[in-house]
Amino acid sequence: NAGVMQNPRHLVRRRGQEARLRCSPMKGHSHVYWYRQLPEEGLKFMVYLQKENIIDESGMPKERFSAEFPKEGPSILRIQQVVRGDSAAYFCASSQGRDETQYFGPGTRLLVL
Amino acid sequence: QKEVEQDPGPLSVPEGAIVSLNCTYSNSAFQYFMWYRQYSRKGPELLMYTYSSGNKEDGRFTAQVDKSSKYISLFIRDSQPSDSATYLCAGQLTFGSGTQLTVLP
Image 1 (cartoon, rainbow over the protein chains, first blue to last red):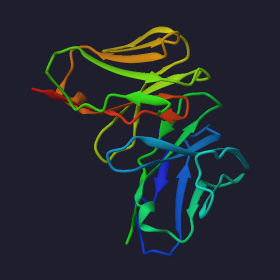
Image 2: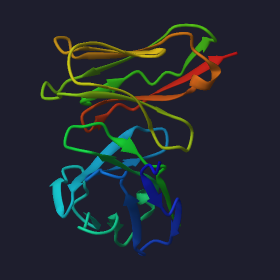
Image 3: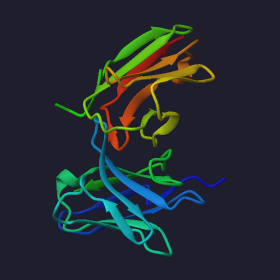
Image 4: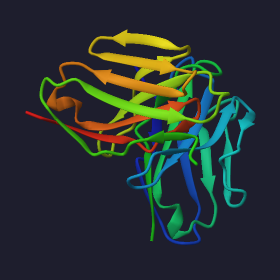
């Protein structure tokens, strides 16, 4: 019973490096969502993707952040030239269809030194 | 004004108490709502998904949605120490900041 999988679970990067976060949705799910959570704060929506398409990226910072969900393989959230303010927990969720229940992964905790 | 407002707590109750967690929202376009439980340093765990106004019950949990007043609630009956966590409400893709609950044995 594989749920949503994320890796790595912890990622340390120095300022200016790139961070790549991976998310494999639950079996049978073709919709993926990325959220960011800062300490003591709620989840902030970043981007919603379906296979090979970005459906909603209204929460995505305009620069340095990008996301993809290719036909084969996991969804990737990419952060270029990381800064200390990017340190957070990044959660991925998946759903079977649009507007359906979202199931979350365990998160990737990014620390930028 | 945030689109989903949630009392951050913290909230402490004795074991066995009924817990009431509440959120308000401002976006009339929200069609569905969710409640999640999040333990420290873990991913959110789905508790309830509701699409319409009214009540939905699942075990010790009851979710209530009132679209006319833009108010959503989660009730936990017979609360247990294992229910101690942060509870997040959401309107579609917008989450509240969470309510921290502690159930004291």
